[in-house]
Image (cartoon, rainbow, N blue to C red; front, side, top):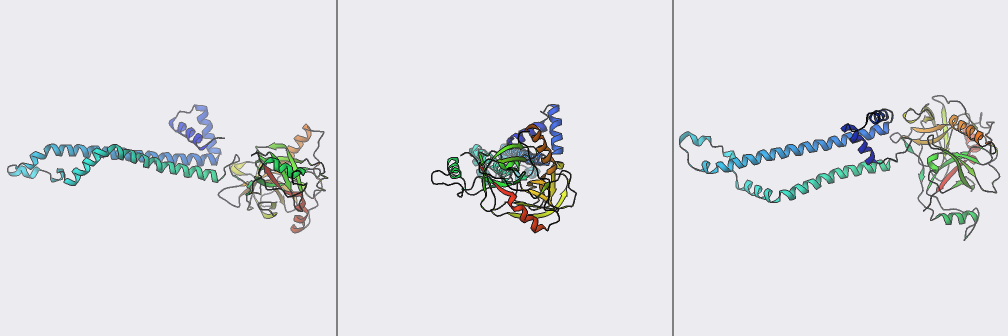
Length: 393
């Protein structure tokens, strides 16, 4: 992953004309297609422009000091002549501004004796200012959580960290003071997931489970399952999980179906997720049939979402599942993005062909259509889960 310094080095080479023609053309294409990269370049241009302006001002100031020093030297050489009485009209040609006052002479002596010290202090001050500017820029970039998708992803960082993987496993299998089903400490990150099939497959966002050492699935009524990742699609921010507990008996009949076609602009949509410990409902409309930067694998929806909503289901008013919530635009709270269900279905079909011994039994009957929204939510609650992520210490 490129750092801020890498980007700045690339932009500097581009402005100096040091990039090879293919690399230069490629960068210009990326700047035109990637708003986030274009913003980074604009910030770089603004910063380097400021630095150049400061350099020019310092050079001009140095030039003026040199001229002033020459004038003072010339005045010093002419001082005896100026003090001597000159006949008649010649006395009027002496310019009193060239005389060196006592205060100015003291200042010149101070400057001559401390020129190096003052120069170093000025350099340190300039470096401190621009170091602070760069530090603020890096802090802003770190706290806006940029992602590979160009927008803010919504994995939630939990306040209580699991002390270590050994303690987690002891609690899950019932050893050293733990018992199966006993409460487990929070993991490091969490998101939302939902059932893909009745026999134990789930869907969530790739960035939710990225870097996971182990996964815990929690539902309402103290449901808790161990899960593993069976497939991940980083480009489209999708991951398929599978429950691996031996005593798992299935989720039961899923009440929704997955929409294979495109949803319509302006459709009313809603989502369920876990940005907090309790399930949270949000609704809005489908505001664009493409995602961030015009990505056609995603929808844009006008639903306020928060960290923890990633991986949650996006449904239309008939109870058809049309997408998987991924993230939001950092400068627009109600501009959220969701991976399209049509892409998820194509992914499942390709996996089924590669793994005929482990087919995916997707639901074919929608039991939510024609029912009021509160009734739909009641039927959905048992199929939407918290996905807790544990990482190695």
